[in-house]
Length: 422
Figure 1 (cartoon, rainbow, N blue to C red):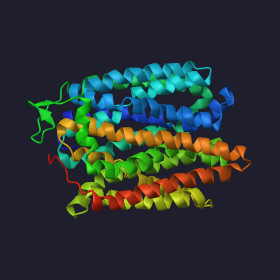
Figure 2 (tube, rainbow, N blue to C red; figure 1 turned 135 degrees about the horizontal axis):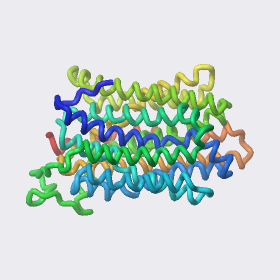
Figure 3 (cartoon, rainbow, N blue to C red; figure 1 turned 60 degrees about the horizontal axis):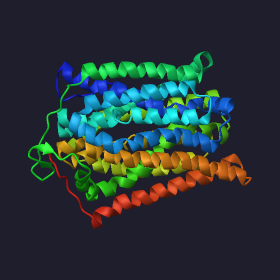
């Protein structure tokens, strides 16, 4: 799939691919536990709640770094920020590969989350600086093509190699890939980002005001709070389902074998990847017909809620079809990230993207751990596993519906307009 970069030269492709390859690794780390979960349960005897907490530890590390990452992106640029943090991912992968108890796994997972915490936000910050505003949604969708590719490779292909290298060998290989990604960032990205002043008071003396107080324009912006629930519960929750609970749901509720579940995960992520690619090509065409990115996002989130209800509870022969339709609808969630950046000056791109991303991973943590916690409570109460999943996923779906209603009605009470147009 080709991405229509706005600069017709090798530099534009090199910038995009440097970010994209690092994000491929980030998403692979995020998704990997969905396939190795049976191995971890059998070897280290961890519970559903511990499994949820272990996967959510990635988001703890990820979320804890978002505010400092935002400051660093705006002050030092995406190249230095992302390269430095990915060294922590190497450290975390090595800890995870040598772990022999739950605590060690948890520590390694936190370091991995910290290490890849800038992979997507650094790209958004760089795209905002180096590419035109009208290309942001397309570039964001292009990044997600590579992210979904990482999830794709950690489904059935990972299951196929597990018997030969084991889950420990997988994390050793991931550490090596991180080294290659760092080298790619060093070679592929410009060393500096031109600092841009803003006439609306976001900067002082032509220099960005990089302080905690500089987050006030973000946290008081009506559009940020309008789109907040979409990031926290819709996108964050989707990540929690995609990267962990879809696999156990297939084996525990649908009673698929581990191999069959990995094949469904592979197909699901392949559909998601294709949907990201279609979005990248479709958005410019929709814009020509007056359909904005915001309107398209609104339609797709509504569709995603319907498809989730069908996927969770219509467990007939066509259950996988509902999951594939869900993947198509949820591919639009990333557009909210490119939209929120466009509401602020370029000098704020790092802080805006990471602040929104923090809300996303808070939601991912809550949903990922919360589903495991609720499933364990249900099983301890004597419910069948399928019933425990039904209750947990039903609560999650209701929260999303409330968030979507807020997204629809909030402009009537808190209208907002972009603070930056270029």
